[in-house]
Structure formats: structure tokens, C-alpha cells
Amino acid sequence: MPSDASFAGEKDMEYLIAVFKSRNQTLKFAERLKRMNVRCDVINTPRQASLGCGLSVKFDPCAMPIVRRLINTEYFYSFGGLFKVCRGSVSPY
Image (cartoon, rainbow, N blue to C red; front, side, top):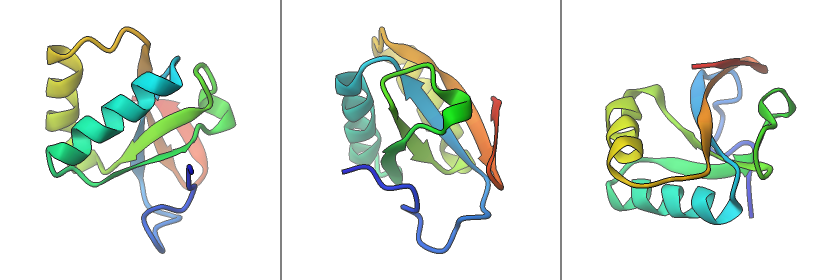
């Protein structure tokens, strides 16, 4: 089940989300990141970034090199983009 406050107590924290147009691809991406020891969670996609299936993968900006490598090396056909979330504001990354 998706959670919107997955990184406990970090509501004001800046984080990134990867948006996909397929729920299956979202879950696959999150699983791959977890296998690479990247802390991530599946969350409901913020309304401002709603171009996908309704679920996104939330991760810390410091994981960006691993995320980019994974996106570039595996075929995630439904990848919709990366977004930065900071204090409720969502912008393309």
C-alpha cells in the first residue's frame, strides 16, 4: 500500500519522485532500487505531477546517480519523468 509519509518525520524534506505510466513498472523500479540498497517508497503521485498511473517512487536526491543509471540501463517504457517535491511544491527535475 502506498504511503505519503514514508520517510518518517520528513514532511518538509526535499525529495525526488520517479513517475511511470504503468503501476507494474512503478513497482518493478522500486524493487530494483531496493535491491541496490536505495531507500525508496511507493507513494501516491502528487496531483501536480499526475501524468501516470497514480503511483510514484519516492527517493532521496543523493540516490540520483543510481536512479539515472537504472533508468538508462533498463527498459522502463512507461517512465514519465522525475520531479522534485519540496514543502508541497512539485516541479520537473
